[in-house]
Image 1 (cartoon, rainbow, N blue to C red):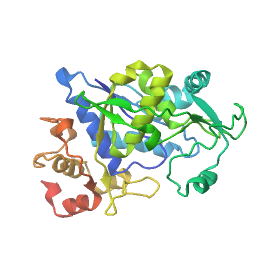
Image 2: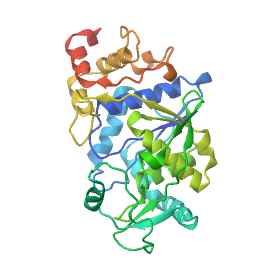
Image 3: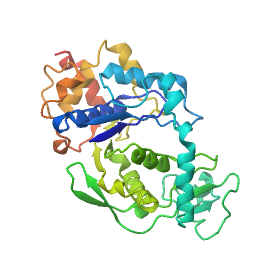
Image 4: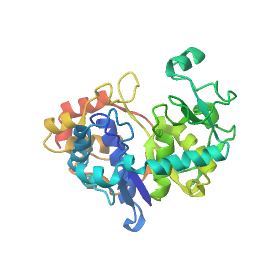
Length: 318
């Protein structure tokens, strides 16, 4: 089983990231006969927001949590020299060219403001305004969108069963190449996962639409191995309004938690409780391994306020 931890260096990591990384690591290390493989993949395509301080935070946070990995960069210097997505631009361009040759893309001139006007919402599915415009490829300041088929897609769940997603409804014609002449997340993620032989993806429930989008994209690219990838969509850490934690909203950062706690035991004990486990005796991430099974984990979200109550009650000190 090959999985990956895929942070972005666009801000300081937070408690929700720690939860996802821990679940990914546990899923791999709990694999039969110790055959789980964890790859560290840092998604740095957003060059405008990527900073060295955020890259350093990724390595510092993973090591503080006690999470190791089997392949990928070991520090910032090695990442920049050998593992940056910026070094793989030709791979993403080739994938988009393949889609174009198969008639699976079209050029889009719509700005975000225009899309908001068209749909009446900033989060609505793109209505396909440019689908029939026939704009020429290679125009400056234009995006390339994937022409999403109406088909229902099937993906594998963590237990190997299959479930259906409807990406045409949930995400629509998404961007594969951005207006600033950079690859978009979906195309880079699919290309990287397939080239790195990833077959088990751990991600939040909020990314279910991305799973459907990537399944449709992989099918259009002829990446048939994607059909065998298992997906585990885990519950999120949310605030009291139900909003997931966000780097842009300055949610509790792991950097701040590292300053507050000498080790991650309080966080790991809260994770243990959230997993329905006895938190007593949990000191390291390896203490969460015995009996770990992703299939048995509830989909109920984790409340940030519960974490602070747990910590302040003294329960986390046991």
